[in-house]
Length: 369
Image (cartoon, rainbow, N blue to C red; front, side, top):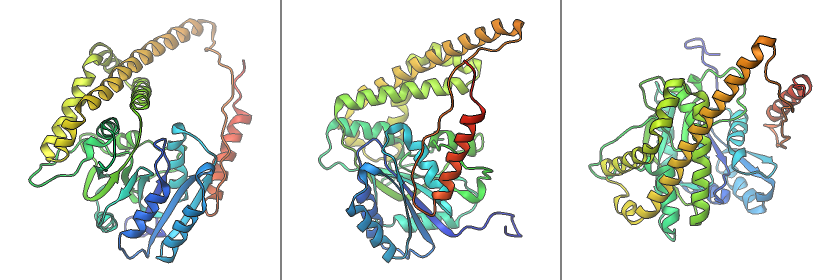
């Protein structure tokens, strides 16, 4: 610990955490872009999560190339998985890292020139806990549906262009954000990391995450129209349900009765950001039918999630009230189960600790049927 501010000492200044996603991106492409951006890589580390079905010799070649440039590179080999595993993979990479500032990247993003310097300058600043970088669309060869997905996911994080004005929001780009670990104060490893949850957890009420406008990634995600609509609906429902479980009664009532207006709020916010920043305006107009369709899929599914979550809470409350006179709670069956993930050193000890804790829960907290 340092004597002046009692913050822990870190082995590295920057840690870059690269995780795969459901988007079918390329880990090789991300690593290649990191190597092409000129920078003094001393004091920097890279942690890459690689599912077994995506580990090949080209990725090993890219990792070796980065090591020759001076980076400390750790590759975590994990079992193949899907979208539900992404938050856990982020937590694994975070736990294996030893940097003061830890930057989350996903396999659908490649860094632009000056990216390293931008985050290096951000690390030298004090007074921030969570920051978001900016995201631009890789337009070449993308379908209008894919561009619509870009606007739904990352349209709020396009950079300022010319005389554009910033319009900060309490959100970060899921494929390009960072945390200052000297200010987090985490007491134990996290089982999952979700950018939305962490932003609301670590950014004070009434404040916004810092913006690093000089750090830019180019996003390329290829996806079909049908898959995009199903994905947005699934994610919207899950988001609404999970938010409802954490919300108070008044917010639940507001969202259930006014949930049909979610699509209006979503589009006005997106169009406002694009207009104020004077960036990607023509591209938004070009993809407008698909962008609106995807926003509707998310919004009505989110509304359904709020309705489902509200009904669920009422059902459990009624069940609890009926059981209380007899001194009983509602019984549930099953066990908490952990998933074994393989890892290479130096992260093996961290992952083994997570697995052991899950086995402990499984042995000692088996709920009777």
